[in-house]
Length: 392
Length: 137
Image 1 (spheres, each protein chain N blue to C red):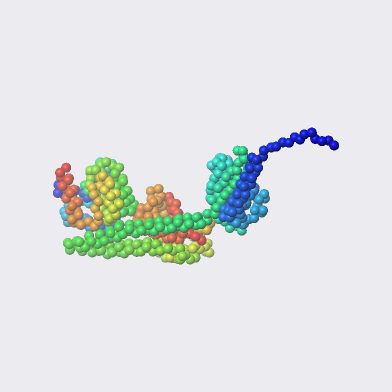
Image 2 (image 1 turned 30 degrees about the vertical axis):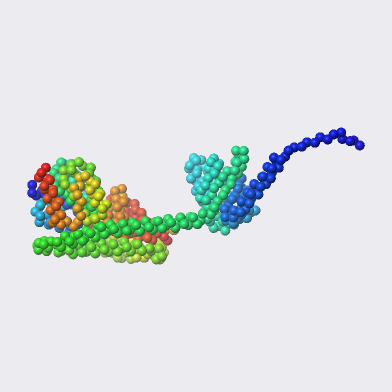
């Protein structure tokens, strides 16, 4: 039997390695602890192509997918809104001067600046959506990107509060504007009537008094009219949102036309109608009556002396809205000069004696209180086209 | 000079115009009036008069709220001409809004802001001042 003469033993100090190992275990434990404990935050990692490599408890909770359904099988695109990604892709493409699409939309910035935070919309397994604030960080190993880590939290509540605040601000702004208009009427118009009264009544000379008496009637008519306008502005203040009912467009138009039959006949105008008899909007019936009457009577009032008046009323669908179009071949409006005045109160720019500068102001406010909007295109001496958008 | 040659009134309110004319006649200040019912009509006259170097009305009363071209727009146009310093311009309006009053007074060639209604006393104060200044100059 061969007896070994000597042993060679090699002792390597692996203290460092062991320490590192246990430290690594600790870190991994801690990390997975954090990952699992985060039940309200989604922490998802992907490889460089977007393939999901880990999917934490929070992601399971919020997105309704199980980790095993997605890890190694799906890309992050599965819980993103396709249109939103495409839209952002277009923005980035414009910015970068080259096509950015697919997964690159998410990591375009993270590639360079290591992380990027943005608001996105997440889609749950059942198709419902919620807004998130997503921070994407590039994971690097010796300066090479090996994957990405996306951490997102649900910001639905913040968003809702933000929305509420915004709508509150817009209501306050509206009310403020009306208050200003109210103050304006009181300051300018009511005072001008009372001024006229006192000027007339201060008169001592009987001859002049006789002359002034006829004016009293006119002054009192004008005062009455102003009070009516004031009343209309106050009425607009009352929120109409809840009082919206289905109003048929063609019926409303026909009743406005029959109301104005005399006026239209006298002006020898032709009216062309292109509205489907089934089309209707959600609104306040009395408002729509007043809007249609005002649009038509304006067309007659501001017709051109050089040609026969032609009015065309049509309605086309635009998403959830009906766009009601009033076109005429009247005097038109110089929008460059008068755009700001057009819908303002007591602003008139035609030398028309009947103009009181209240019609379009009321019309605009009525439309807006029903959640719609009004736009105008016009060319001097050619005609005008008013577009009124109202909810279907 | 004890009377004013020409008074120009720019206002869209026919009752006011009639009343003011009456008051001025009663005070025997003037019987030569130029009446414009909005800023555009007044500017048509003024721009022509300025171009031809014609004599301008001695006193002009301008309302603020008017159709077509309002008082502010007319003042802007008049401001561009240095000849406007030669005539006396008052802004006369029913507004008691301090913003309007300050804005009117901010034009160097606007003598003063007068709030409607005009009374014989107010007219006296305005025109006695104008006559005094014209005769001393």
